[in-house]
Length: 124
Image 1 (cartoon, rainbow, N blue to C red):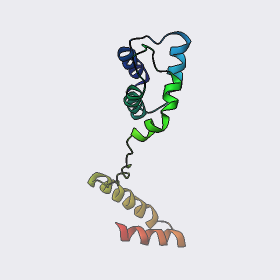
Image 2: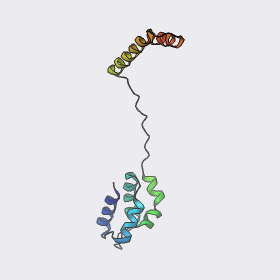
Image 3: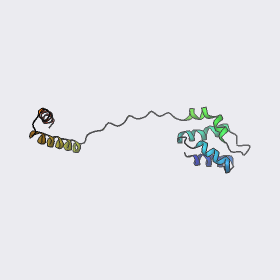
Image 4: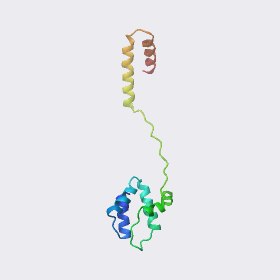
């Protein structure tokens, strides 16, 4: 749900229109809350704020029920990051690069070139 959607729901249910400073204040207050919070706010405010007076709920009505609204917001368990699986194409490309490094190091002299060459030959 969006802030606009929540305000339109309240307008239809309570029979009024958010306008002017009142509408801007309510929209500004709600801006930044997640969609799950806005859905919970719709449920709780409709249950707790009577429509018999034909008044729209404002910031005070939401603040008055804030704890109950947050209690209604579902808690999600985050999924673990997917493990990267090396594809056959990526493996082939890596082996190709390692092979090229071995060829470059074969002609070089020095202790590091020899050590790198041996390590890369074991990989390739």
